[in-house]
Amino acid sequence: MYQVSTRLLEGQPTLVMRAKLRVGKMPEFLGHAYGGVAEYVERHGLDYAGMPFAIHRLLDEVTHEFEVEAGFPISDEPGVLPGDSDVEVSSLPGGNAAVVTHIGPYDQMRPAYDAIATWIADHGHDPVGLAWEVYHSDPVAEPDPSTWKTEIIQPYR
Image 1 (cartoon, helix red, strand yellow):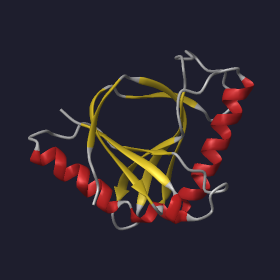
Image 2 (cartoon, one colour):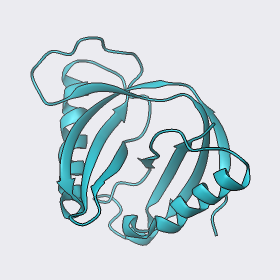
Image 3 (cartoon, helix red, strand yellow):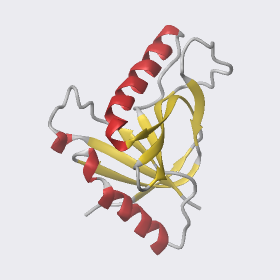
């Protein structure tokens, strides 16, 4: 069973890469995006402000195609980025959010999302925008998926 907590978020600038892809290509894209954004942050002397995250939006239930945005929060809005990569400026919203921590494989997070949706409905709120996942574990450094820690954050009003 999942424990839902609440958090008041401040808006957060991010650097991301975006793609449209099928679910099977997600791990490859996430590795590419985190590596590309990290290299960009280092090359341009920017500062991280948190762990890697991803936002997914299902585009087609039949083909399992998603629109994905993945990257890192950064300390300061970088303004216009030099056009030397596929990295883009984005942001995570501020406001009230429901938060759940999932321990285990990524493909077993559905109950955590369900817990957030139930909590939001039971408390008379409405979800705002898309939820995102914050990854506190590095699958390369921690190859056992049963130990992976992921926060799921869903803004609400």
